Image (cartoon, rainbow, N blue to C red; front, side, top):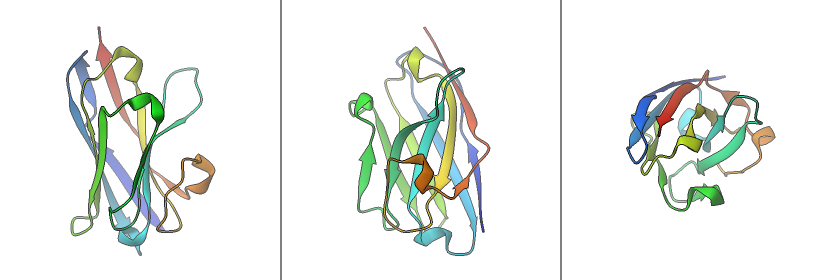
Length: 124
């Protein structure tokens, strides 16, 4: 079992930056691929970024156009999402997820463990 706790969300103006953190605990958490997803009101939960167990491989949603960066520190059991150039359409609850394996996927069904999420609101 893996527990995930997100932090770092908040209110920011368009063009600003935020860094989200996801603290993982539980057996084998540092050997699992991790992902970030987001869900805006009335919309499906969508893939944002993912990173493999070692941090050597990453995947991003095409709509990000290089604005976000995912990273991890396995010594701290923490995954980060650096978000730059935030837009009002980035407003959503951002969820951290852990996969049962060390490889990444963009499919939310691939992920077995989920955090409660952290709210990101971008004002125009």
